[in-house]
Image (cartoon, rainbow, N blue to C red; front, side):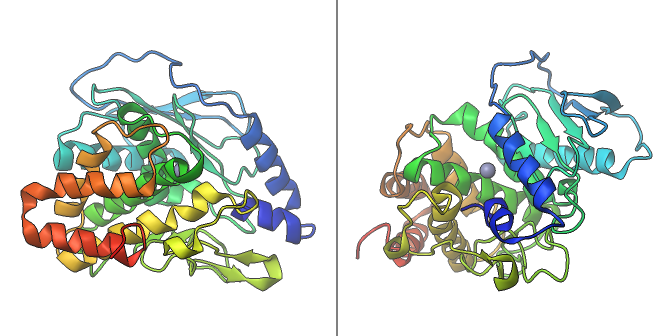
Length: 326
Ligand SMILES: [Zn+2]
């Protein structure tokens, strides 16, 4: 079960309405990768719209590239988050926007009423305001923005599906680069980073640190009253195979943790060697049904040019999570 489904099952009254509507809306939303044509260019181009609590996309244009901040904090945060993510991919990997060809980044804020999610729909970003009880506004979290935009990069670079281990890899890549964008923006080393996705997204008094933890999968939230329990595994022995627990967002804990262990072992900035190896691996065109072990071997191949110490640290990380055998 996803976080939203767990909440829907346990929470009475206050947020059932918004969460139920969000789940319905998520099922209704389609992925349309070819929609809306953009004029590619060498400079980034952001457009931020306001849905004004409707679900018609993109809504009313509120801020375009190079315009000063407007009086809507969500518009400005969506604009800034898209900008930081773009700058990360440009300066760290020499990538020009999500498609590598300067695609415009369109965002829409205030999507729906108390919508409890953020999403890249293949053509644009959309952000809900959160229900105000459990979740805060989704524009507040740079790693959430970068996670969702990275789905656009993954779509362009890989054929990864959204089921089984390939689906979990899809989610893990989005988490890894989401976390790296945040670390890069704060110039944090692997030791300084919190390795949490969406730290503080749950409103108090909910017992939760974040949506996910790359450092300690399974520890991000635990609120019995709300029926919330983080079931992400950190090792292959705990791989989730039932369909009830949202396996794509659950099993991503395993490759997430391998990346964390590798980055911690190397030290320094995780977006440098570890990030480059993951990026290069992603850009080899991962197959639709790529499993963890295949992905791990591809990362080892990409790591070879960094020397024996790096390859050994990476091998150890994949062994520690049980993807490669001793
Ligand atoms: Zn995702």
